[in-house]
Image 1 (cartoon, one colour):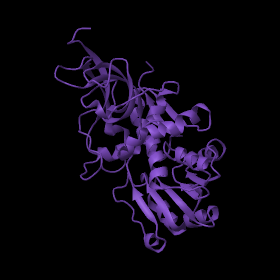
Image 2 (cartoon, one colour):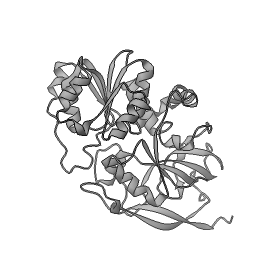
Image 3 (cartoon, helix red, strand yellow):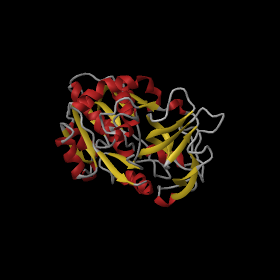
Image 4 (cartoon, helix red, strand yellow):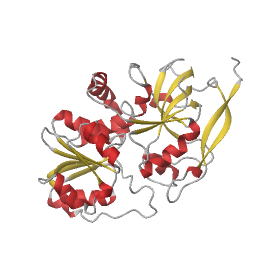
Length: 345
């Protein structure tokens, strides 16, 4: 192929900064063009995107914000997120044509990644490639770091997980069961509750939408209190958990999906429990722990192959269906990790 030859490139463009709930119309499909060779002077890579990850944090990048751990998107440009891709051309010593990688890429068919140092080369291809958007990617690292590093769990402890059937929660629950903890999860439909108990091995699970009193519900499932809370939702659930924590309990604050679409976030009223019960509550982000990625693989790969860890995915076909899939995260439409298939090679 000639150096200057370009191909059409379907893209999902970020229209403008969002206020209020995310809508599909905040994104638009567009056909652009791209050269499939890395430009002279660049140390980047050109990739063909195969799978893209829908993650709640992405809505925060659609707001004009300062002080966030992730930079806001640029209006009029393709949105970016985690994905799995194949290298088509490389001027970087770490990557060569044909390599499979996961990391941050564009929501488009092909991407030029100028700083590929943050990409991970995929060495294990005897598992589904889509897993590198989830269990073997950023959500997997989030679950591993949040549970083992932030929570310092011990066998026999009582563990509660919100948004428990999602990309991260379903893994935290299985890690906790492997360690010998008592695990309860919450989700928003009967189908998800059944999956938590019957497919993912949680000891108990409940539908938070059916509970008028969350404090009482948690007391029912944890009469002796909660040692570890893996926080994914915030708001009223966090308030109810604080009342039910045991002394010296730990809360890993991974996300607060109930708050992301609110113009005015809800307050938390029961924070005095952090003092009274000597609770340690810590926020964290996965990329602070990427140096432990090999530990995640060592912990999880053999268990996937042996069927001792399972992973639920909700897969949609076609880049053009990505916006609806992303918006659906905030109404709980997905069952498991939300993945968008751009190409199956």
